[in-house]
Length: 367
Image (cartoon, rainbow, N blue to C red):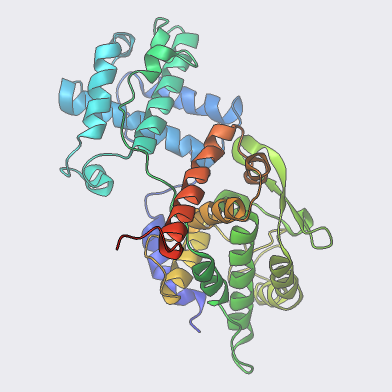
């Protein structure tokens, strides 16, 4: 089995240009750069947004500045330019996102237009930014920026909403088995990586955790007796996640035989950390590493190339509903604030039931 160093180069490439700490002045110049920095500080300090969330707000608002540059010829917007943003400008911006063609790196990544969810996120970030400007007296009040605004909702295009992608029960089982323990006699750290990765996959799928929740999980936050994990979700809200017997066994084995080996290998290099999942140097496993671990084993198991960390969360919810779990229970387990967020999984479950019916019922097929 390959060690972590075998795919370290790929992780480095993934992480370049993706700093964890917010940097409000990157890509923003001119008179509004100070407003932008203050807005990001406000999101971090008063809204308790994580560094990754702050970074996303920064990037989403910057896309509006790029629109002003490319379509309006406003390279360095002033406060007066921002104060003059109206419904017509917003409609143009959303149309630009929908119809974007691969003429830039960002457009190429979008594949010729953003998905509805990405557009909604960028629109929400822009409204948050303008609400802050109104609060600071840098922009006049406007119904577009208010919460639960019908005027704002009407601007969103009626695009088809894609259903979350979930793996089958069999594919999930194959993924869990992918990091099987190395044969006796191999390097202790290689075995430790295998034990860690198995526990990581079991927890992602068995508890439906977000990658950020796994990254921040500490040993003190895991109770093997009750099969519970205390995690920090969106908005720094703490919740209790529940995991199954197989996840408990995998975590127990990792804590007993895998994690101590990683701690021992890092002796003298750094102070011990509380993190449940450690890297080869004894530090906390970052979300980039977690994402790479999932992608690596998904490909190794021959699964769909689209499988990523959030696919396991989607699969967790879908498989619960397939098994008859109540929607409210799934909502609580996922840590969703609104049932409408969880509702999308019922469509996935219903579609799966339809496929099974068409395949199995003798009267469902044409002659």
